[in-house]
Length: 447
Ligand code: 5CA
Image (cartoon, rainbow, N blue to C red; front, top):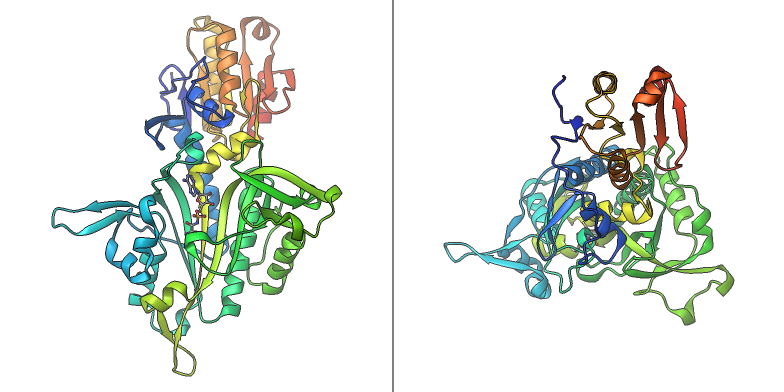
């Protein structure tokens, strides 16, 4: 018997506490399914532990976000979760943030806080290290836990108190260059969400406590979304953005942003029915989940925190900044809201915790066990992430669990099929089932 690796696990050994009943504390389907599929458990209000299955999805989403940030020229770093109150006093946000900020006092009575976002800290780093315009543009990001003491944490990981966010910060010499940085992030967001199988709509947004005068929220439509949205129906037919992008072609970037912002799209915070230019027949009123939010706020922080560089003519210039967030942990719930059915989760391939679920219909039967072991090793060897349900359970239990977990492919091996030289390959999304030889099943899964 081969040993389990992180990408090939036996269900009998894997920590996957699935639930048959829907927990009563969960109001929306993604929260219910995340609990039932053994992905998360609540630690305290709005704070979750990520169990192995949930953790895998979180990491898959994080990796897509990372790849697209890097592609757009942003550089990854890591800032701490705990920050000093001093920098927040400098920016003036220490008082503004109110009760949403978790304030901490250390043993020396110094005021600290658990970071709700990082504009201050990154601006301080930039101000201390960068002296000349030659080092611009810069876009720095990290993927780190944040804490906001929300009045009403709810819907599981969708509105948590502790949540995982990607936040990027751009620094430029002037507003035009800042606009280019903004466009790069805008376009990279379209690609990022498309890779996760999501249809997003960029909407003009209020800037709230982050500030600034240009901002877009990226929302996916879902009945359980917290925001009411109003948008032109043209957005529903737009192709998701999967094409390659040349991030050095600034004119093409501006075109793409133009195409994605030419139609009306606003959340309730900004929508004004009286001023809305769209005919009722073309206006979609729906609910949405905000999965990303980008801001251009010029010199709001750089001015107060002294982020200045020497310009080309030797004059000191205060840098122009933007910040760009993606709710990585929220996306886990958001993707489930967008992709599930009555039986459970339907993972898009790109973020699925495992690609294939291998079901042994008669555990203990020599032929079935041997065939499953062989396929399990071969799939693993071919780099396919696989979970083998090797428990001595009834077939019905295994099927129900596999549907709930929502892996893209199910490979079912039973004694009757084996006698005829066939196995069953089922696609979770389409429910299409096919009886094929073991070899062709393997070829399909690894091809
Ligand atoms: N500093 C800026 C951009 S880096 C910022 O903090 N923006 S934000 O407040 O809009 O948050 C960015 C993203 O984090 C949001 O679009 C949302 O997807 C996610 N997010 C915000 N609050 C929560 C929360 N309480 N629970 C889960 N995700 C959240």
